[in-house]
Length: 176
Image (cartoon, rainbow, N blue to C red; front, side):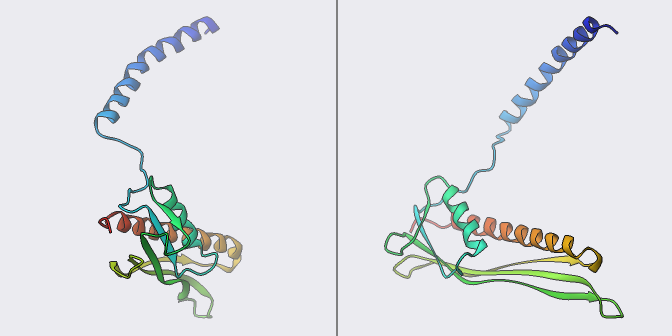
């Protein structure tokens, strides 16, 4: 096949595919498809309180709150409309399975986050709520470094899931 014939063939294919692409874009536009956005909250200023220094969960929460359209994290309760207080923020792992010789074969990773939301005056908007995530992690000493990375990845995934749940709860709170 000559280059001119290939070019003509490619042009015909583009002409045939253009209406299909156009129809697909109209279908997506008509169904209400939209990219996921940060939830909109009924308050503009939030204080994060009770988190450990350099808490990865607090950092991800701060980023998520700051990415919402009109809500920002502030440092003092005097500036805040609401206070998100961390009551418990813990990660741990326990042995679930081992061999007859005592070698670990499986871990259970756990992440607990208990929080409450209140106004600076003390009015409770969200009662103390506990969110828990667990994941199982198979283990093999032969690939210990890879399993460390997998564990870190699983904890990051659990943390992101907890942050998403907290953000949905914050979006459901009526205006204080």
